Length: 288
Image (tube, rainbow, N blue to C red; front, side, top):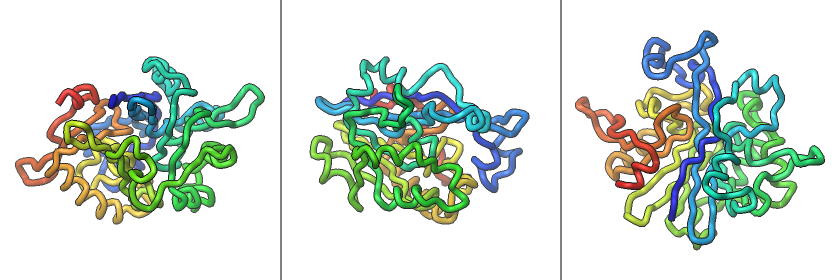
């Protein structure tokens, strides 16, 4: 098994929205904002390669949106989803599976693209795309709070093309026998039925793709919950046991949006609170 970070660029989000009730004088020490109170965040995806599978976890923003959209979120950077896959020696046709943690635009925008005829088609034509039926239905008929985050052009074409598959209520093991160490954690604080990917590594350790339960290393502190979350108290209830397990078992936590840090481990600090104990690249994490 090989793991590789696929950095699909960067974008900007409002600092207050990303840190919720935490005062700016606190969060700005770690994540400075520009003159419009916007902070830079990564669009960090994960590539899992086995002997016969190339599995992509999330797909970034993509490039389908118009200039008005781009002016709101300012996607930028020298790397792109397809460009980074090419560096790994892969073309879109080589991707066999795309796991979408949830269908907010910054996680699934790259899942579909415009073809030469101006039609929106799956970016990865030979891949099976994975979500849950519960989350798809939630995204397809969004509430007013999340409507701007669920853009149908990012995911409805996948269903129309017949490439979208729904996870069972439990994990993925029973449907991906070629990767028995893969399982899913269902979360409901950020949005309805967001799925975190847990991957048991050959050396006995566990890597968790944290999606928006833990979007960055700054969000390890329990009260640091995004204002984007539809049920922030549920996020608190989900984060606490997750971080406790991560600390006890020294899970490797892969961070999708942290502007600099790819992977962390956590442990109790001198005050007994769970905190970041180590920061590393994915390559360093795989070295042990």
